[in-house]
Image 1 (cartoon, helix red, strand yellow):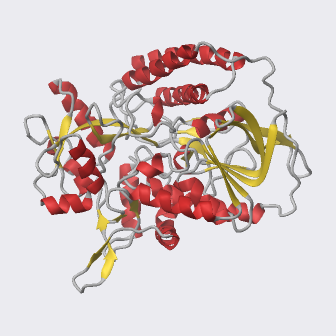
Image 2 (cartoon, helix red, strand yellow):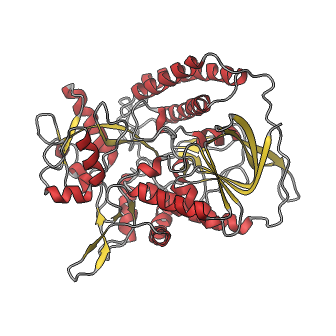
Image 3 (cartoon, one colour):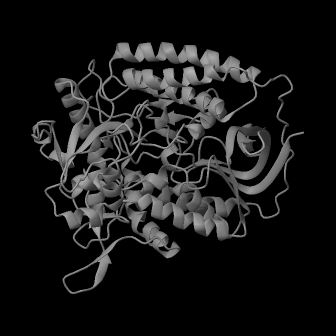
Length: 540
């Protein structure tokens, strides 16, 4: 018998977007937050840089909009960019009310004000931050508030398997698909359960784990994108995968990101011989947008046959470095690198998914009662390349906007629906988990080799052929064996990989993060790449 849980609002994902939405909604609804791992384990926790917003009197919303549009290489939705920039400051003020402690400094008059840093692509200092551990400060603060709230239940160590949808008919709506909850796998009991909800919100983050080298934690496996696609939602711009230019290159470093704020505060990129190279690639040098910097590093590594390039901030005062980048200083020092005296070895790594599930300004998807917010959504904000520190901002702005719409449409006397039972009568325990591991490694390696920073049509064709073979194997495995964390993630990653490849094959140009040797020029007109699933109406 499948255990059924019930709530008003189901939020799948526990990062900045999910927790912000939960806190906004819990005044009027019973909320369940589904967290695949421990509550704090997600990309938000590891975000170092900060959040972009106009707090400086010399800055302007128009300048923030312009910087975002330029970084997005002509593919941003201008209305969405303006909507986000205008709502940035109120959303950050809400964060501050929750207890998030951004760094402050004293001005010339001795008055304390927020310390604003600058990152690549920004024309002004507008990044609020908490040293170099902004995400950790936000995640732990919001998690603490969520845990204290009486109307929020937290389901930790639960995987979402698939959305549960039904067709609804009425006088005004004819056969519209609506989401009524999800099947979930309780990793604590290793049992499949279901959960009914009036509203279901996907906030599962990105899909950078599809690549061999990534700055993201293990949970970033594209679960929400894959589930929404299987349910019938459209996706857009999945070909635009942002590779962060500077991840720490060290055998014992794991996936440790070196924040763009280092370059914002004067760090220089150098070849192994100590010479700079960024001025040869872009007039903005180290402060060029991420796609340009990542390609430049990749080009120099391949040209020289080098394992890495170097990021050098040692020319800055030692006290300044330790004060502004304590996390990075301590981490690198533990590996034998003193960044006050030595350059840091760096390589690019998959970092951010700019495309995703298509939504409107309230996070609504193509399916009724289903929303998507945060990195897994496609709002039109990022275009062909995300501007630094607009990611956490998007989480906050669209969580707040979704909360307003959801609150207005919740039924206060809603009756719970009995959901279909999960059928596992014909599956067995697997004795061949090595198959999952083999497929997992093969997928991530060929995605890195064929669908990485520089692409060709031939490489994409090879990748598509490989992914179709893997999909067939995994589908057969999924039908015959009981679910597990690795199987569920692999199933989702393979689906997302196919979407990335198909979007990349559709784009016959080089723009932003999508660079192909076969079409090195930019087309005169910019169009989003939209893939339609097998069913579903269109969001407006």
